[in-house]
Length: 306
Image 1 (spheres, helix red, strand yellow):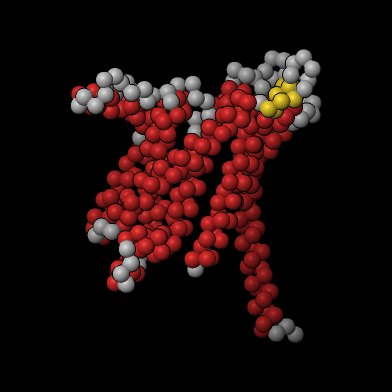
Image 2 (tube, helix red, strand yellow):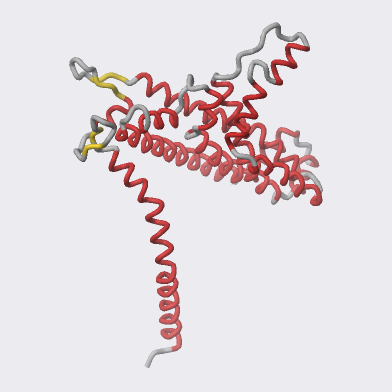
């Protein structure tokens, strides 16, 4: 004779089993959609490029070797692929600087929004989301019109007599940085604002009552409280910035290639799909390692503050 507790546990197990069975089709579709393309790219990275842009089903690690090394055509000796290393370093540098720039601009913006009255917060939030209404390509061309030699910035500086000739901003790393900072700034503002909106500003007032300076209040009270938003915003900006394609192509003019341009080149004109696949997986590994290190260090710092 089963007790009431055993009957309750059996009912709970049936309920859990039924939930898993009902959600199994959706979970299977999500799993296949997430891992299927990735597995195809991974398999292609270990194949041999064909003579006519196709792929031969022969195992070869050459694509992975070619990510950071290049083989001499005469004696098969390996040396550092300087072009690939330069592109990797430039992409990582621009992604990091873009993240820092958006944080420097986004943090005070989120603070300003969070300290407004409840009636006006929605309006400021609405204004921040307006850029998302426009296509990324159009926004990038808008930046191009501002920073080109005959653009707004150079025109104003020339009329004020500050410069005698236009400053060459377009088709430089600076142009790419400006474009990516503009495009990804809302992705930094929104998570920080979400954290800052929950901040109890009575703690800030208490800090001032204890004669703390503005910098001490920012460093010891505000920043630790909104750190989850900062981490989320940094992740949301760093990942797309590292793989950005449209902005570097338009504002860099093809002169300053980034990882996405290099990958596109291998799948297009280069007709080397295995190398393009290996580069794509390498970018994913770099992003994963960087984010794990960042989140781990941020977590340790959070524990110390806590």
